[in-house]
Every structure is written in structure tokens, then in C-alpha cells.
Length: 199
Image 1: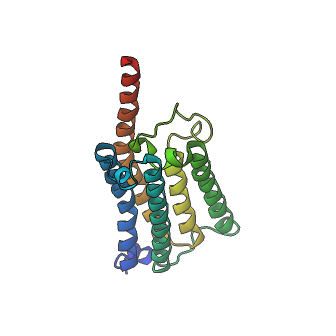
Image 2: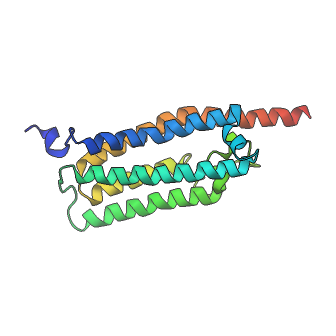
Image 3: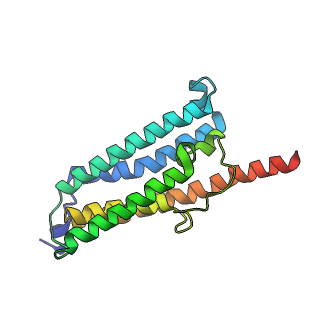
């Protein structure tokens, strides 16, 4: 048995499903959001009410996020357990990491609001100005960083080294998603600024 197979059960179906779910979320929501910006599909379904459409998408994103987290935990249960930290750090570090990660996620949502968090700008629901308070004065993308920290914390808590590799994969997926989200969102706000100047 080689060193990699001692810490990762690469043949586990649950691991493959978890990796697919992790990639699915940002890919699917970027496709749906861009379609909404161009064709207003969800807005039309809700009788032209963009806010209701955004709330619907928020529920979908949140629900699939919960499913993704559940699939990740199931995947970890099928992976080899290998102690990585000695006591008391085996409890302290994952708890602190998870708490800070959740702090970034929750405060980001609070600062942006539901429509700001869940792609409201693609529905034409734009914020008046860029949020500059905590946690955006600490990190550029606190929600993605916080989420990644929670994945790492979970892997450390359950003592699954495979989870750390999955966490790295999560962060890479987020970075790729940001390469698409960032410029497109900037374009939306730049377009609004140009329209205001023209008036």
C-alpha cells in the first residue's frame, strides 16, 4: 500500500460525488445568473418581479450548498482516519477555524444582504455603493475564504487528510469562479455608471 492510499481512498464513490457537487454549485449558478442577466428567465417566471426571482435563486443556492456540505461529510466518512494534530490542538484548531470561517460567511451575508449575496446584480438589483466594512476591509472575498476554512476545519475535526485535499480543490474551484464572476459583475456596475453619466 503506497503512502497516498493510506490517507486517501480515491476509489470511493462518495468522494467522486462530493467533488462533482463542489464544482457544480459555482458553475451552475454562474450559468443561471448570466442567463438571467441576458434573458430574465427567472424574473419572467415570477411575473416580472426581479426581487422574488432573486429570493428563489437564493433558496436554491442555499439548499444546494447544504446538500454539498452533507455530501462532503459523507465522503469524509468513507476516507481513512489519520490523526493529524496532537491534543488539545486536534479540537482547538478546527473549532477556531470553523468559527472564523462562519464569521466571515455570516458577516458577509449580513453586509451584502440577501440580494447582494445571492447574485441580485444579475437581476438588475444593484447596490448603491461597494461594501467596505467588515469583513470586506479584511478580505476581498471573505465568503469564499470563510467557506474554504470551514471545509478545512471539518477535515481536521474528523481527522481525514483526504478532506484537506478536497479543501484545496474547493479553493481552486472558487478561484476559477471568481475569474468569471468578478469581471462580469464589474461590467454590470460599469454599465450602470456609464448610463448615469449619459443622463
